[in-house]
Length: 141
Length: 125
Image 1 (tube, rainbow over the protein chains, first blue to last red):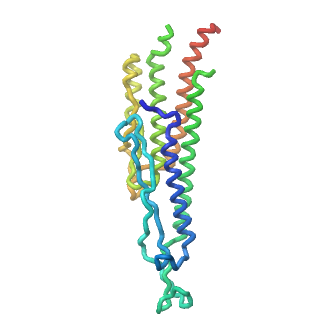
Image 2: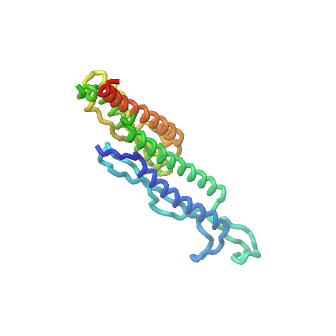
Image 3: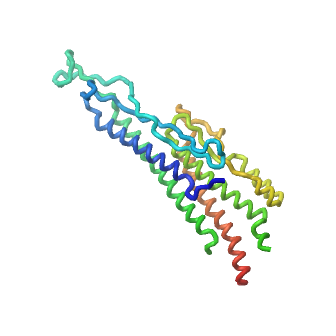
């Protein structure tokens, strides 16, 4: 049996890494919530991360564990917001401007979910350390 | 004589429980890592572990206890709370994490107790 002295930290570390990427994407979405012109032309399109499970030691039930990784950053294909602003430099002939399909409230909710997930994974690392300390203290008193 | 301390069904049982606790910590970590992964199904130590172990300890045979193994399985009893098919619930996992930590503390204390007994026998005080 293969027992890790710090059980669970690999999974937690992979999750911290993945959540960090998600936070970066969220902040990018918020930063570009009003960007009407990008180098690809058109307004900024909201991006979403896609998470994927990696099963480590899948065929060994005595040390199976699931890690997580960002398998891709995808475009959100919901329609852009269209507003009537004839004075805007990116307005079309009818005075309509396409704004990004970013909803700042939605991003804030995702940001909080992400930070909660990070806290949960940090508590895994904390308890793993305590467990290792207790294991090392066997027979000390 | 010393063997008697370490080959009893109870001592072997606590060792098995400690193995299970370490594995469960790994399972909880996997579940929390995948809390946002669509279609992820939570994992845990097999649900029958506790009953298997208590039956084995009940027989009083250390050999039977040694045969019980904790392993990680997909928890088929958990149901998805929302439409992404993920069966992990944050509060439940955090509660299990705390419970598991206390269990680990108890088990290390019980194992230490066996060593303390041996030491006091050697020192005769």
